[in-house]
Amino acid sequence: MLGSRLMWMFPLTALLLYGAELTHRAGAQYQLQGQIEDVRTPVRIRLYGAESPYTAFTTSNSHGHFRFRNLQAGTYVVSAFVRRRGEARRTVVITPSFADAKGIVRATIPLPPPNPASTSSLERVRRRSTVSVSQLSIPDSARQKYAEAQRDLTRRDIEHATAHLQEAVQIAPKYAEAWNSLGVILYQAHEFSQAEQYFRKALDADPGNWTPAVNLGGALLNLDRPAEALEYNRYAVKSRPNDALANSQLGINYFKLGQMEKAEEYLSASERLDPSHFSHPQLMLAEIYAKRGDRKSTLRELNDFVARFPDSPTAAELKKKLAAIEK
View 1 (cartoon, rainbow, N blue to C red):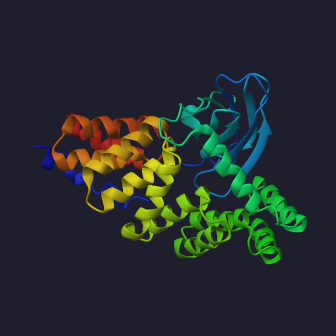
View 2: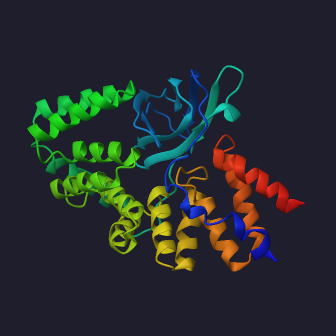
């Protein structure tokens, strides 16, 4: 019976919702070589840490090729806004298992699929412009502090980055982007209550801003307040139906509320949009399938997680358990 052979490895939801908990090799430095597919012009690209504060920027060549050097092992997100297509975003796992002998990890970032929802590309551009206009009153001195914080994060200097962001919001209390960045730093430190407050300040400064809205939804989930989080996570998916994070969080939200069919729908969408997403939709899908007694689907999701995060301590534990099950 499935219950006696698989359910003992759950609940997997006891794991952190976001964080790959990867094994780091002391002193190891990696290089990410990637390509944004199907672009014919240079694209500005951002790389940021999914599990710890970090950010870096570069510009691709005219064929979408880009490179980031001197990276620590970990899980990162590559983001690039491509004109007329929107944001291309993918999770990239940089660990020894994916690096070649020179420490190079290669990744291809597909363009976002056409948006089937009623929100047209023109409407999305209008919303972006509206958010930008609402923040035009931010003085240059505050923007300079924000830029200094970004440079600090490239050096992984979290203390100075936090100080510069706090200076930015002291100068400009309505600086939504700075409030959100402070929230992300606290979120990644697992200080979810304080992160919640910063995300709320960002939304107060710029109502309807998608980024702090989806981040607030995640913070509330980690604070075990799914009923309150549902409003923000629904909004995140409605605004960006092809965003993996938004779909994953809404799936987790429904899981916590006991609505398993809806949870499966959105977690599966997240997995399809970004197969290595840092929220690990495979683990929660596996738990859903195990509860149903669906052995085949449970094992498929667990094996997929192990393949995508082979250097994670969770994967190491699962390998042993899966080997025992296969016997």
